[in-house]
Length: 604
Image (cartoon, rainbow, N blue to C red; front, side, top):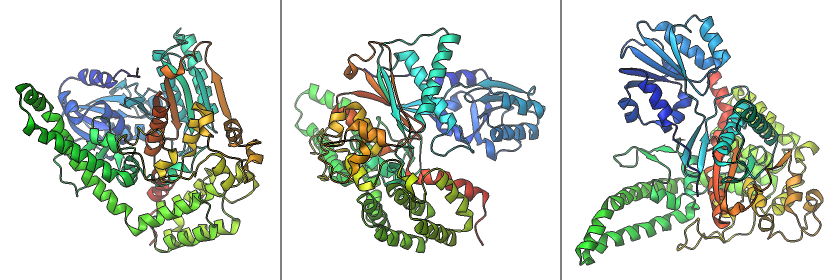
């Protein structure tokens, strides 16, 4: 049993077919992932597209077909760019395709500029992509004045996606979550469900394929994305730009294909994606041996039936060989990175932070990074990690590092520091910054964030996802993501706290326990409201036969996704993950610094 959503590609192809003849495509760059997931360039060519240009980089169109298709969002900047292109271009027929809906604001701008009657306007009502059988990516438009962590458009589009899921597969048996954004999501869901009932006369099926829906809010766990991911897939995201699961291969790799898709179609990638990087080499070696044995088996075949079976497998074996070669070369490049002094120093600082080492040691190491002008995204990432783990920095340390950053990288980054502080990532320590959790040592012990581990990895006969004795901390070589502990607690509270012995750190005073921390007590101590909405009577039956929906607000790390899959596999459950896409610590920090770098010229 699985959730397979209908392809959205026919909607785009139908619109392309309605515009006869050859045409140029001008695309809002923020929609590139969405459109490329719906159609490859060759498919666009089959439907009459001759050239593709970015909307923000296009002025007048002086050559090419007489028909022009513009695919754009509806925010003011995008529509202003549309107006500029249309006004500066003569002798062309324009079709404007708005995603995902037509808005009053867009119409007002087009009417004010006097071009609304000169163009044909259509709508492409798509907000989600099923990237993998168990992953739905929700498209989220840029929102300049909202939080880079979780924005109102993200909450609405995720709520809309969840309503669409329930319309097709039945109502959730239960909706649970914790964090500052979960109430807004629940309110959006309630409003959309009411609209569905009143306007469309649709009632949700009370006992369908869907089980519980668990919402994991990034505001509850901002530590995890700031840590360096140590799974194979996570390191790829940390190292290379990956757009919509498509990786542009580094120039050092000799391959006819310059792009690869990181997904189930790549069997080699699938077998190692969730492995801690220290175990990837042995896994690839084992796979190479297996492939070699399969190819050599042809020499011992004695019957025509055996030969026919072997010949039928040749395309798959050749494909696996090509995939293996690419991933071996990628692994070699990643290995060189992980052995570099810079990488090891950053990893050492991170591990020292969550292990609770003295702050004076951390301070000296980060000061050395600033002195050598380490990229500011790395420096800010570590400072924010320090701030989050230790409930902020002492006032004098906070002021001192703010001054050092400005002196080293330029005063233009001062607004970024203010934005980080406003988002709760770069704080001065006070009673209010404790977030109700107490000190880090007791908090991390209560949630088992840093358990004692055997980091040699799983038995090679079972594979990374098949060993049910692994702890989640294996993924980060010693740290278990808080969001995954929360998910584990929702699914099986007893298992989540099974190894928490009597507390000697004072954490129980905060977590409300007596003989040992409990999941409910630990969850209550986290900052932010909680939601727990039970579905209709009977919807909670046979949950192990239903698909659990896990929602990440603020995006998910590749390593968190690996942890979700591991937990569900361990519990014999099926799941569907819904998020706006993959995130990393660098991406999170850049969300605060990019605007500064775009608006400010470098210091002379």
